[in-house]
Length: 106
Image (cartoon, rainbow, N blue to C red; front, side, top):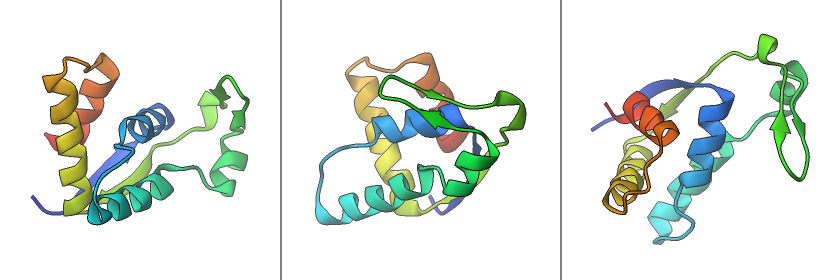
């Protein structure tokens, strides 16, 4: 597997951010750190899309949102693949997770 270009919307970015592993070895954690930073929202995106974050939720203006282009490295794809496999094995996949899996890894 090599690099892969994927377009993700706000919901997909938030969901993917939330399922990334929280621990691992140094190489994995460096890859996850970079991935988390790229999935986060820039000040410009917050302004353009009118993103509002509260302690309970995140909201935005759906009429202004566009997908963002990501290029995932081989290491990032490997980390995501392993996490999706773990969720599958533990029977913790959701429809949202499956949709992201299909978009990124199929």
